[in-house]
Amino acid sequence: MELDVLYQSQIQDFVECAYRFYLRNIARVDNPTIIAYPTDQFELAVERGHLLHRRVEQYLSGVPMGALDGTAIDAQTRLRWTRIVDLAFKDLPERRYPEITLVASLAGVQLAAKVDLLAFEPGKVVLVDWKTSAKPSANSLEERIQTKVYRWVVSRSIEQAFGISVSPEQIKMRYWFADDPSPIVDISYSHAEQTKDERDLGEFISRIRSETVFARTTNAQRCEHCQYRTLCHPLLVPSAIPADLEAPEEPTSGMGLDEM
Image (cartoon, rainbow, N blue to C red; front, top):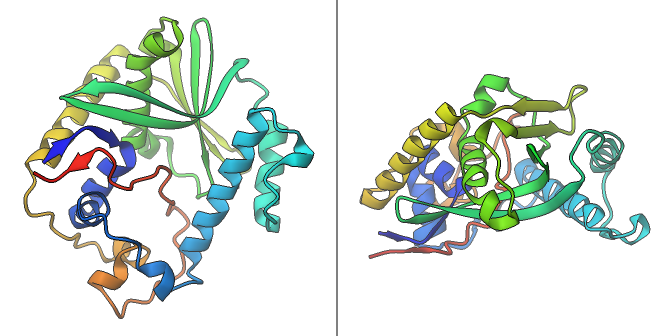
């Protein structure tokens, strides 16, 4: 398989269920589950998350408050939106770029990070990711593929993109959990972690390139809210949405992946 561009969510697909990676990124199967389960809680959570992201992007891009996305929002989304506007920007650097995609070359692939908000000043870079799921431990966040990809890509690309030179120690990943009373989880970076991330991510790329089987996961919980569940488990009815389950945050239409 040839890879041109790879997003963190595609790596996450491969790690959680290689068959889901295959369906979404190689076979490019259209989503069959929205039709089968139009009111599923997970799909509703996806819609709410996307709406929140759009409003924050518009707000940071200078769109007047009265002209923001006119889609009607529910009470929960309105509360999240209000908390972000009131609390999220107070200590961030002034140069701010919402919904920006940066890329860096690794193992012959352009590894891409679509950052919800990149904020920086000389000597300080903050990568903000808005979350509507329950807040996990800082340790589990530090081990996420998203954390590894975002910090590494930004550390390798920001000088070329913006003409500023920063060390890994000047980069911070910030997860902002909109439903939590203490919404911020900051994760620092270092040269040692940068080296480890580069090694780990390079190994993931090699595994994806060499895969031929694309086996289905044996973890049934991952199947319950998968968009392809009706292909693998036609009679599976989703249970209540887990508090820590998240929607995909990047387009994963298969762009940049071609089957040999």
